[in-house]
Amino acid sequence: MDWLGIGVLVIGIAFVGLVLVLIKPLNNLSNLFFSVQKTTDDLPHNINLITDQTKNTLQASTETLTKVNTQVKELSPLFSIVGDVGRASQKLSSSLVDVSAKMQTKAEDGKDYSERHNLQGLYGAMTLGYYLIQRRSK
Image (cartoon, rainbow, N blue to C red):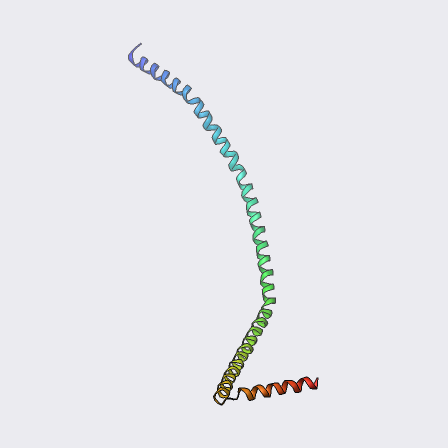
């Protein structure tokens, strides 16, 4: 045998050894590709289910928003009325505060006047007389 035949024989033996070593990893790789194929075969069905559920959820949320908007429109006049009542009560209470402030000022002025002119006893007597007249009439 010449050198060429020996070289080809060595290369053949190395190739057979390489094939024997790579059989198990290549078999595992084919199993992996088979598993990926099964997963991707189920994928369109799963995506259709998810899309249908999402569509149903969006329709339900749209209906809910429509109902909420309708209820808010129905309650809007009520809120307007409550606001008007609040503003009216604020005006009334501010008017009452103004009246009571004026009465307090007048009372203080009357007190100052009675103290300057020493009329406390006279006012006390008049008050006592008024009280007694009211008691007798009852």
